[in-house]
Amino acid sequence: MLIDSAYDILNRSIIEYRGEPVGTAAAVDPNPEATHYHECFIRDFVPSAIVFLLDGRTDIVRNFLTAVMKLRGLQPVAEGHQRSMGLMPASFRVGNGKDDTPLVGDFGERAIGRVIPVDSAMWWLLLLRAYVITSKDWGIMADLEIQQCVRQVLDLYLRESFESAPTLLVPDGSFMIDRRMGVHGYPLEIQALFYGTLLSARELITGVVGSENALGELDIRIRALRDHVRVRYWVDRDRLNEIHRFKSEEFGLEATNVLNVYPESIPDWMDGWLDSHCGYLVGNQGPGKVDFRFFAQGNLLSILFGLATDEESGKIMSLYELHWDELIGEMPAKIAYPAVSGREWMCLTGSDPKNAAWSYHNGGNWPVLLWPFVGAALTTGRRDLAQRAMDLMAERIEQDNWPEYYDGRKGSLVGRRSNSFQTWTATAYIIAHKLMADPDTLRLFDTLTFSTIGDGSPREP
Ligand code: GLC
Image (cartoon, rainbow, N blue to C red; front, side, top):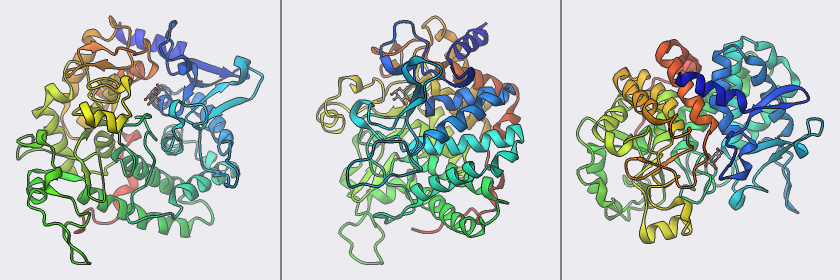
């Protein structure tokens, strides 16, 4: 059975440290394309952890949370700089492959392109919440090191720098897309993770002695972030029409086109792309810039965490229905649409051959996106779309050896440099399977107490 084959990959990927399971390797490919995939990546462990939590194997998740907490702040620090204690590594491995040596983290000092993992500590906090609500181990929040760690993460992510908006400003390649792809500034996926992180922190520290001030500040920030994303990132027919007719060069407080976005920057492919029933959150925005590309993970997490309104969430799923061939194709789901090519590819990726058009991060199809897709589809009452995506994956994933990603406009080719037996490809299938069997498991990502923050109606920009 397909599910057994997926579990086999998950179980083979488990990494032990001092006799205890502590994480999962990114892939269990005997002939890996990427040699560092024996490491445990924080973001890749998240779907493994969800499976473990749903199966009651909570110990491994607790071990992981503790191990990564102990690695925080151990990054090399350049001369003249101060140590950010809330920074967590992108990945870790057991030192020298020997069980009794300390774990070694990678904070970007070994990573290709030296990219900084901004998402790691956010995933860690989201997972801490998921662990607590599943295992009911609220006692972990009494641990002083955990409390200190949560505080340090919040200090880092809420630190003031050059802010002009409640969103988080980050360098290129700081999350799942961990190569140059023109995703620096305010990418949607980071904002969705940031929102989920702040909400998780709020839920976890409620009741912790001395957290009253922090809670008040968190509420303000969460509300501001939510309203900002709902208004500024949302695009549907009406909004596109507004942008199409934007006035520019407006100076002063009364400006409507506050970011001075030129209508001429609307890409050609947008012409006729949206019908009146659909919309989505754009990939990024900043001064003079809207990145109109559709980024799956950011949109799907926004649905799961309740960052998008119910109406917006429904319209995002309608977009999937309308553009099924482009956004799902033969393997759920396209990571970003459309691909960039030619000069734009040269400029945005630094002529990266791995990110050639319709491959890898640049328009490739990633089976790991099945789990947030199914989660988002069920959240919005679109079980039909969830089932369709699951059937597609089931058709060929095992015979293709559970690849990391697929290439091509429709994702019909196994990724040229894709690993086989990629752990999060297998765990995505297991989670999707569990969500379909028991939609109550969606509680792991739902917004629970989040609805108590504000009235949910976006403010004008
Ligand atoms: C690639 C992906 C990244 C993932 C890693 C391990 O670098 O871009 O998101 O964490 O592989 O699977």
